[in-house]
Image: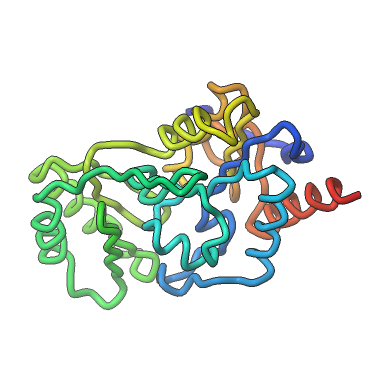
Length: 251
């Protein structure tokens, strides 16, 4: 991962040459204290529909959320989606491919619950193929959650995936970079330049995959060590960047 440095905003999006990959939380939608608080937004989803049209379908959303939750938030408007950081993927043609959850995952979830719950500030998000413990409302629990997650991961052969005020446990398998590579090998993405936009540590795999395939990553939020080449300040800046591309295409 590159050292922290000042990154310039990305160049204007070129719909005729681009395959676009977007994270959801922190990129298309503001981070909320509880993941269930993020819901459909008519203006955002209308904009995504226009971007999808401008790109001739070369838009995919790659998120840590479960695929069904992504569809709930985006109103089912994006066909190509990868959920649970790439463990569950739906192609642009609707075909769905999912990794299998190991039998030990339910035991691991119970062990994590016993270690850190109940606590009024913690939120357990069950994604089916993985589960996450959010401590945004209880930052004082960060070390305890991390220690418990590390012990559970080691005991049950799971991967520990830290994020922004969250620790996730998941079976070994596909990540966001794998999702980018898989989409780029398929129509309508094949042969175009990949651009990956995301905010969290899990998006670094997407940034690296996009760069290796001749494109680039765009970090959303504060500057930090990253493999992205450009940066946008926040969700509003992402919306403005996408909106400018749609207006240019329509002109």
